[in-house]
Length: 245
Image (cartoon, rainbow, N blue to C red; front, side, top):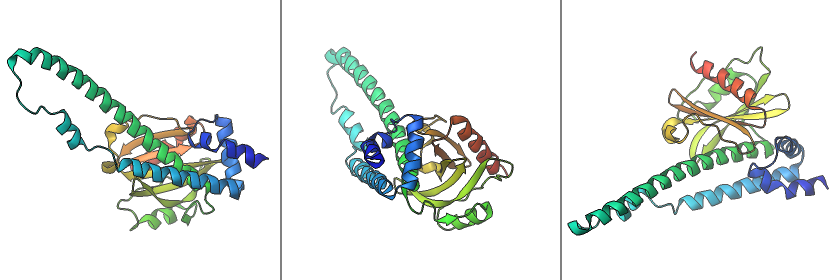
């Protein structure tokens, strides 16, 4: 019966629309139930396939410019009308651009939440299992096109579980899994050039999880977890200090 109840809420969970308590309960159930974990993983994979297919038909910026560019010079008699139309088009394009930026940002946060859920649902959430940062960091060398530092976690309540390679829109990056009490937290790291800074500006978004992002030394960091925002901030501060070492 418990599995049937959770199965009915699976789409709501993946959309980040469950309450914080229900999200934590669902996470705990997924980690202990192979059937529900498989269902969650299948849904995440299907959503990723749909996103990939949808991006294949996105109009290019060049196409938009050709559609909006004037084809020939108009008569002066209609200059005032053209100015009005141009103003309307400019406003529409600006609003469309802002809307696209917001949608793109929400899409990226949503994909990261899906990657986090997929890791929790997997029987092997990490490829390198170790709490030793000196073991986990070298494992990524040669597997991703960048390097990074990991924080020293002594005297903190965070523990490193391990790491794996994750792909954000076919861009390879690092996914680190941390444990905080009964919570699992994912830290994603990608080259900043492949995830434009203008999309984020340090903003947080909520998709049923606490999330934070920032850019440092050419890398874009994302943290996703079902713990409180204060815990996410404490982990982000540890990571930021590690990059300065």
